[in-house]
Image (tube, rainbow, N blue to C red; front, top):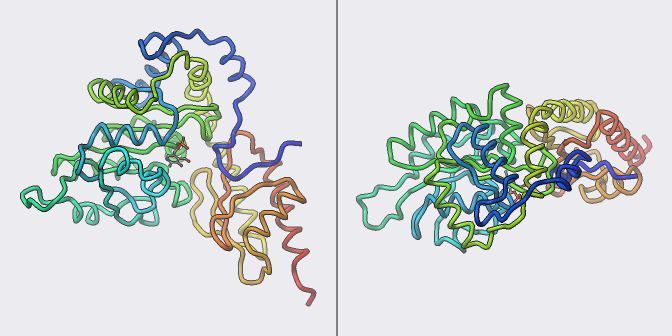
Length: 353
Ligand SMILES: Cc1ncc(COP(=O)(O)O)c(C=O)c1O
């Protein structure tokens, strides 16, 4: 039996419909701009986000580094959240590949970056000592805050700040459609204030590979050159884009189901003695929780017992804490199995009174 894998939504497999579409996809050489399936996917992504153009890229990391390289110059600076994926988990690409400095501000409980904090870090261009601030980068949903969605209103206020100082705005929208589903607004409304957005097809949307960088026609043309420089020019990758089309057309419509299973998991954890939620509210597909002081196991031991005895996988996030992420393959029944396993492990480790 396949495991109930709650470690991430990146573990979501392509659906049978995706596999079929991949087998039958019309393809061409995309470096020549001749892959009809990629062209369709790029047009659809641009349309869905209300922008002029999009570029199919290999991963969220590639979409973000292309955004940074295309907006910035060597020695310039990006202001970004201290817990942002781009800062924490993208291998220092901005510095290594672009000579670009990341300047961080705290991420607030709701996933936003404080406007005053942002403004404080924008450099005075008249001072010859300063790097030039070029870009502000937001993350929507914000992974470190259990996938908190950022509202369109908040993003507009960041845009207004960027406009005052002549800065560009990029959104790492790896889970943008989760934010749209949670806030019940269109993805286009959420990113209207941004110059560029990266979205991922291979997280909760189930495509096996692929992300898109979206923005103006002129910006995407420059990003295309940078993608080639990074070795990211692909050929008959329409085979991958075919799954991406289903991800965008269909899988974005069902994300509220994943948010419901995340709430179901959170509710079960809230009621379980030995566990407590680390972050509330649970608004999208991530649940952060931890072992309380009464439990004589650490996170690794608890996760190993759950995998070994109940075939349920969760990711330790710290010595006593976890992250669980719901996705297409996680049903309400799977959540019940996970909760039952957790309850049994906690009961079996409890000392008799
Ligand atoms: C918020 C966020 N941005 C970017 C990425 C990078 O995506 P990829 O793993 O496709 O490079 C991730 C990956 O989990 C992510 O969570």
